[in-house]
Length: 129
Ligand code: HEC
Image (cartoon, rainbow, N blue to C red; front, side):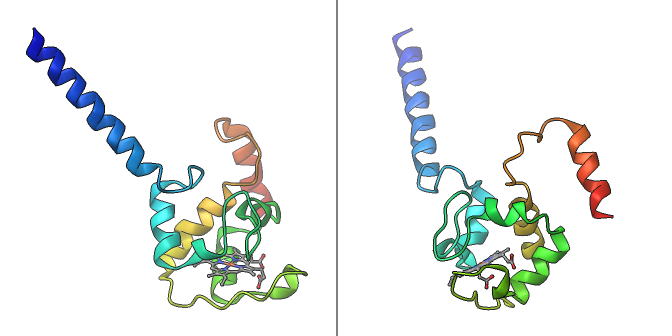
């Protein structure tokens, strides 16, 4: 019995250690996105909910670009969209697949609490068409 409790405690601290490791990334960035943001250096200038060198992704999401438009803007930024910011360098080294993953995530940050309901999602899909 004592042994069993010991195992329990050991696995609990293992779980805690895992949480700790995740805490390295800002808590509002999913792990996969943190990996891409770090790999392509977006993280140096962007945060989901905070202006840094570049705009917060939640503010980008408010512009209601399509995912494809965001991918294009990663490759060919249009600084006129963001008066008061320095121009972003074109990030053509990002493979299209990863740029699309980032775009989908950026667009999910528009602050609308509608994630769970299908209705709003369907509506915004219609708008894009
Ligand atoms: C050196 C800083 C820097 C890096 C690195 C950077 N950005 Fe930006 N980003 C900016 C700035 C500044 C703006 C606003 C001015 C502009 O669009 O040129 C911006 C704008 C944007 C926009 C909005 C485009 C628009 O026209 O509305 C998106 C989307 C974006 N960045 C995504 C990314 C992604 C994804 C990466 C990584 C692959 C990245 N950025 C890397 C600085 C940066």
